[in-house]
Image (cartoon, rainbow, N blue to C red; front, side):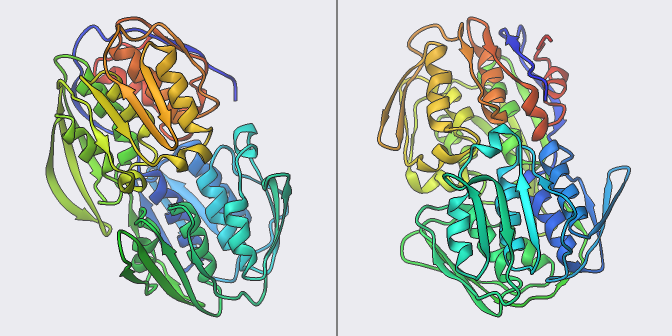
Length: 441
């Protein structure tokens, strides 16, 4: 993918209007995977058509599912659990760590041989945190040093059910183990220390798989399912991605005179930590037209420009906003007073070391920060912000966060590469300019 640099200057007027963000990426990945494992035909409406999700569609086709698209409807004819075919070539997952980790779970309990690779960013990310637990079901894994892609998987024909307690809360690792459990003989159990996003569990139920969820002491959960399981095709309506909504939302909060309505946003309570944190900062943010679609809560976000104050975000909130910390950090840089974002260890194993990259983004543009262990402290609006160059490390969320900083800062912000935004948020710049952002280039 050709690098695309961009310099962003302050928006000359407030953002205004109504808009919709692309479909939820987490739900889009899972809808393709589970539809491919189901018996019958599934229609998916509102699928995110970014590069990451399209790589998942290609992978499921290579594994034997029939997937077609007509207008904005995707049609998947599934093969059934245990019936995926061995692909004739390497599966290229592009930039998507979510797809690679979740698919590892599925492949580990299918008696086929597969090889996954990805772009330079994905090949640098650790996979051992899924490889290690999944090896316990009888699958074999081969990877480069540090558990990095390319990754070869020899799935097992007689998969053992796993019982695993996550050392660190991670929806991806949890989901990989649960997906493996669909074709294991017996009860698969995952315990998580803090409740993480539960799209996998919700979608299992949607496709007819019984999932038992019970509360553990503290904020943890125990999730169990009995395999082998049978999935029955069901149509899926994908809501707007709350992680994608974060960028026009924070931009509207920071740019004076803004008044924006973001329609049809997913409001799963395990995904709305950012909205809670912003309200604690004094954001003028209301939720309108709340409803349930496809088993997930949905609503419209009405946001107006606000003077924000510092916030102390507890560590137990991290799983519900793990992808939103870079853009929250930008909001904190413009807030009055000190903010402390606690328990960010999971950020170190994202598309980049996202904690270090977020600190670099802020520091390059005049914000003062301190890192204490896994906590990030941001000393709000002390000097004019902007004027720096942001290195994105091929991380789409860092690129969009940097663009929002440029729109609100006193001095222009340079972004070294924005090409990877298309992997998760196709049309991002056009959407922002449709609200009046005035991004050039």
